[in-house]
Image: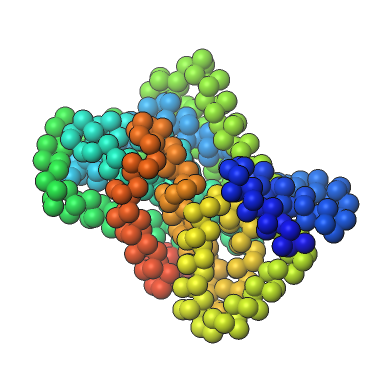
Length: 425
């Protein structure tokens, strides 16, 4: 059964069938091979979606789209530029910093790519940066959308591996800040070397002016994250609060969202949410079947026999996830692999929250690696360039994130220090 499922899934990928449909067809093939009642498929797909934390996904997607339409993202760009835009290479640093702030409410890298990229990619090109390099930078920076909490992949991992979503969120700050800082340092040095960005400060607002104009936008992550860690509401409820806040600010304060705009925003959000939920439903059925077939136990035993230490286990898992992330969408990978790998990691004494961060950061790399990097497709649409043109400029950014991943993997306190402080036993 397992062989038939894997062959069907890989054949679907080879024929460019969508990830969700390929996984679903593989699951149905497995059921046909074992003559299992088809009614099981409906039951398991429903069970995969019938989880309260998953309600956060459509809300965070809607919040991100409202931020883009309501002028919140533009004000965040002006604020970030006022802080770091005055130095050589300040505009690329602004891109990283803005994505970091925007990520603190959107939870989605694709939403971050469209919302921030639509503003900053043209600005970077106008200041003399190559279009392909600007696109590669934006795609990489937007990856922070799933590392800085709240994060949709963290919610999925928490549900799949039965780990506290609140602990995952607080643990995400360390890796997110590390990656943001290293990326800003890298682009600053790179621009110095290339001689780019000597006039990046042109048109920059003063810090006080930019802060005043972005005050309502900057309060959004404070309200959302403060409410979660202050015990006012759960991460799932926080997603609804984010929507309400973005709607009020966009319509009543900035007045850039009209009732006419709401239809387009809702339609865009519904489509994005439906795609993710369809992936979750099919991946849930797939995971159920391979679990019944004993695949997780077999993988666990193999890893324990061949990778004798936690260090070798983490290296092997990182190598495997990096390759898997190139071909399978992040959400599907987490839902399928989370329940398989988390128990094995626990056997090696690896904290489940730390392991969740490793999985999320690693699979987030799949968003900026060909052939199926969703951030790449999004930024190519924004920058109006073809995917093959940006690969060369993308390689240094991928290497920087890989370096950060290794540090996050083997220095656990980066992820766990804040978690242990907030959730002290």
